[in-house]
Amino acid sequence: EQQINWYGRPMCLFQGFWCPSFTLRSLLCFQKKFKPHDTDIVLASLPKAGTTWLKALLFSIVNRHRFPIDQSPLLTTNPHRLVFSFECVHFRHEDNPNLENMNHPRLFSTHLAHQVLPNSLTNSKSKIVYVHRNLLDRFISDRKFFLKTNQETDFEPLPVEEAFDMFCKGIHSFGPFWEHILGYWKASLENPDRVLFLKYEDVKRDPISSAVKIAEFVGMPFSEEEEKRGLIGEISELCSFEKMKNLEVNKSGIHRGSIENSSFFRKGEIGDWKNHLSPEMAERLQQIMDEKMSECGLML
Ligand code: A3P
Image (cartoon, rainbow, N blue to C red; front, side, top):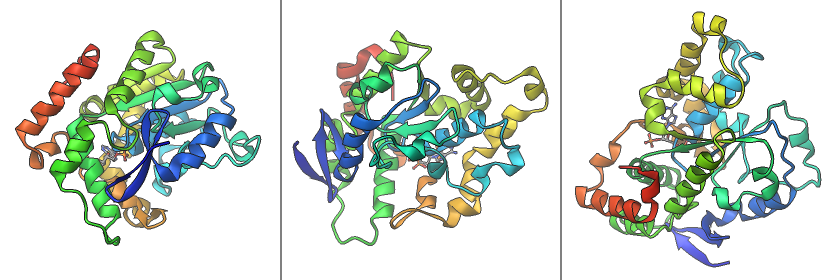
């Protein structure tokens, strides 16, 4: 399908959504070969919406009976190694033997839009947690990530105005954003037992209530005893930005190729866009949101 050069990185239009070309092979195989289990849990998001954080939270909630907090694999392993992404797993084998050997419930993540998830997954009983983030903060986070992880390459990054213009036209990784957000939003209304729509900002403001909500949604509610001994607070503390950013594995480890784990932990703030983008840009984006996705009622 159509290919473009986005910030010097090739992207192709995959079933109506812009995907980095390097993910294409995995995505095609995923669509054909992935065999969902009814107990699977999939974290879905646009890049830079808080995927790493939600991976850590989901992993901790789902595996809390396997590992005490002070022995959590998160202390020594980056969340992306604990929760595979459909974009990065290569579905080479007919029956995905590695995936079949995983502990249940299996946790996965994806940046794919709901509209292009395979029917086998959307028709299964597996659960999807979607995390949405203020689009301006997400845009800046994505840009900073890209600049940081491409310091060694020799191409000129697009000026911020041009990159923003492309973003507003829906040309960005896994965009257009309005289709992406609407797809999961509608699915969460139609099937609230199967799709949970979260906002980064809500999780940031109240991580404890968010952990409770996630645990209930995935069918593993916290018991009174767990609540009394402060387990929910311990989990949100372990997954907090400050804790995760300062773990040795996340300070020094390598994610993939030349991308360092530390690239996934920048500021973790709400409203950083105000340091980089103008009020006029925000107004333009809000207008697009009002035109294309007014039914969600999301504001910047
Ligand atoms: P910033 O660049 O604004 O700091 P993703 O995981 O989807 O790639 O998103 C990365 C963004 O989430 C980055 O945003 C990163 O700092 C932030 N982030 C990572 N871990 C976090 C955490 N535990 N709590 C809050 N934000 C976190």
